[in-house]
Length: 217
Ligand code: G3P
Image 1 (cartoon, helix red, strand yellow):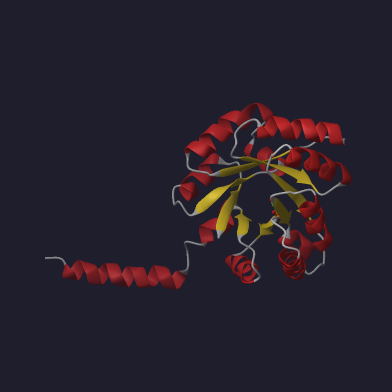
Image 2: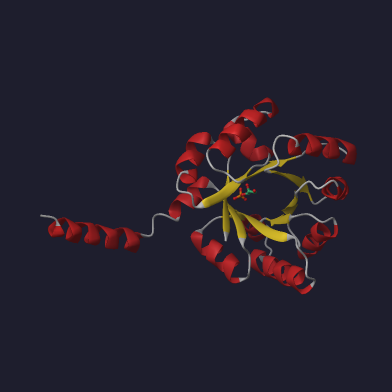
């Protein structure tokens, strides 16, 4: 299982990265805007994130046409070999993705809302495909069912493309996804923090701590 943090907010990321539980960091333009990280800050942010132990860092390319997406993607990949380039599942995004993947750059096809888009990601040799669980549900679709279909289709076709589930809003969602074979999930820091707040675990630990004190001389 690989868990990622979906944020560019250093203050929120730092305590979670320190746990060693999280494999990397995912971002998108909205997440970067919220954290106030502009393109001029991508290299310092990458240096910080990788220095804090992130093993993969995702930056999303944007642009109005294939060429702009390709060039931006190439620049983003040049930041570090640990950068994965996200591209949207549009015609232009997939075209740019195919070219970048052919050059050995690891790609994540993102903004994925329908099962067939996972097959498009596989067709362009993307390393990852990022379906938006919560947003599919918000749109009245069966998000979990769609991701289940993606997982089954990728497995049945022997594809190396890995599902990286995003827009995951609870620990229950995380467990449901994993039950369907999803091994990579990105979580907002607020959701990630809940993984350390199971009340019965906290209560049991308090009892153990109290007992342990009585063992001490
Ligand atoms: O990576 C996509 C993610 O940021 C969307 O999350 O919960 O705003 O739908 P959410």
